[in-house]
Length: 244
Image (tube, rainbow, N blue to C red; front, side, top):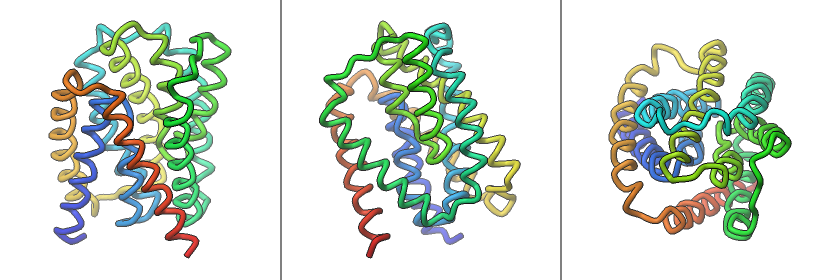
């Protein structure tokens, strides 16, 4: 892998980890939007999960006293189970199909955010947690990106930005470890990728610290609109480029 490619990977990971730390989710939506352009889809997923896992572990430990495990469990358990099953099954699907589906998912998430996210209030019950957990597990298993679905459940259930950030990061931490184990078992990453992984870790640390610094300074709803507009445009570009 060339130096230019490694620098691009670092920039993508830095941006993704910054978004994750500031909004509570979004890292894999950024990384999976660009890394498959530079490597295979499965390798991009493996690298994304390694990077995000480190970030979520750090934030979870930093805010461990604010994690609301009781609130999280109804959505965490079905997500982890479905995520593992779907991720294993997706290994046999072609990278081209997976990346096209990823583009469709990005557009759908972007449209949903702008049209409905402020109008829907989901009560944090076992039933709603199970339903959203199944959906989140499918998205997580296919695209390593279940943040918006998890946020719909956890945001109204937590009492502060700190509780929300801590709880959703712990949620991601568990699910990331599930996919990480599967990725290592399927050899999505190998020793030849070590330079890229090391460079990515440096970028991830910088992005995480930067994101935490701006978390309390920039209104999440403003920052979110910019990110989701970017996600939607990226999704359209993925779809058009593959169809043409």
